[in-house]
Image 1 (cartoon, rainbow, N blue to C red):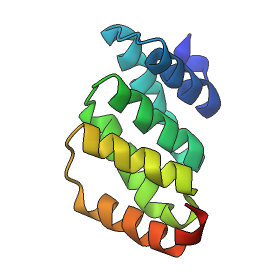
Image 2 (tube, rainbow, N blue to C red):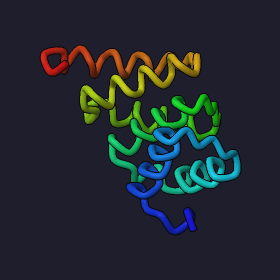
Image 3 (cartoon, rainbow, N blue to C red):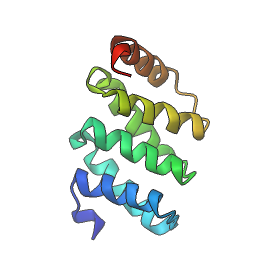
Image 4 (cartoon, helix red, strand yellow):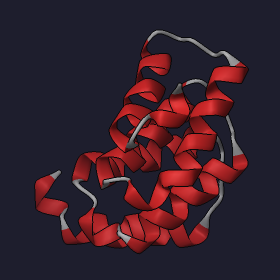
Length: 116
């Protein structure tokens, strides 16, 4: 069923799992699989919300985190202050050291400093 979801459905399902503290491995793997297939279609909010959701659940899904991070780097200028904060929080919570992502988030935040 999740395989039929679009980016909004994928991100919303991940977010819902986090809010409800549903840490079902099989479900989260299905969400990650669908997200990986459609990552190029994710908006900046879908990217940030998905990263936030997995971090909230302490789910360090490496392929998904790499894909989300790479997508965020390539679209750093588009990231809203909330998306920047969500990404920064997610990588901090999961103790992910991804220097290019952190640099992109920092650069983007500096450009939007008055919006925070």
